[in-house]
Length: 133
Image (cartoon, rainbow, N blue to C red; front, side, top):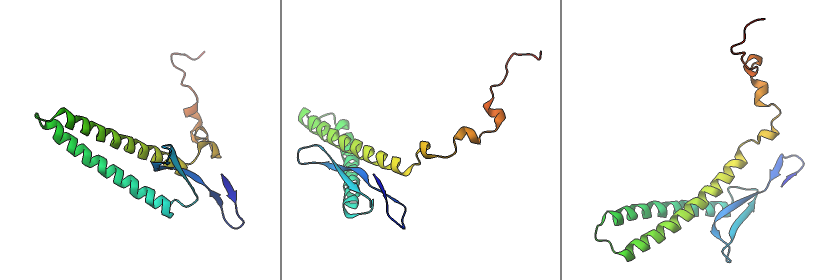
C-alpha cells in the first residue's frame, strides 16, 4: 500500500513477519511505515536472541552426539530443542528475506531493460558454420 502526501515521497507500509505467533499459534505480522520503530526493534532483538539460542543449542548438540554414553531421553530432548531452533531460524530467514525484497528495486519498474544496455552485436546470434554466399 502506498500513499502520497504533499511535500513527501510515497509512504509504503510493509507487513513484517514477526518472530512470535499470535495467541492462536498463527503467523503474526506487523504493519509499519517505520522499520526502526519500537516493535520493529523488539522483533530484531527477538530474532537475534533466537539465533543466539540456536547457535548455543548446536554446540550442546555436538557435545551430546560426541558422548557415547548419552541416554535416549537426552537425545530426544536435544533433537526436540534443535527442531525448535531450526523452526525459529527458518522464520527469521523468511522474515529477513521478505524485507530484503522491499529494498531491492523491482525490475518491472525500471525504465531501461538490461537488453537495451547491451551493444547491438552482442544481441545478434553468431552465424556458426555458414559461409558467405
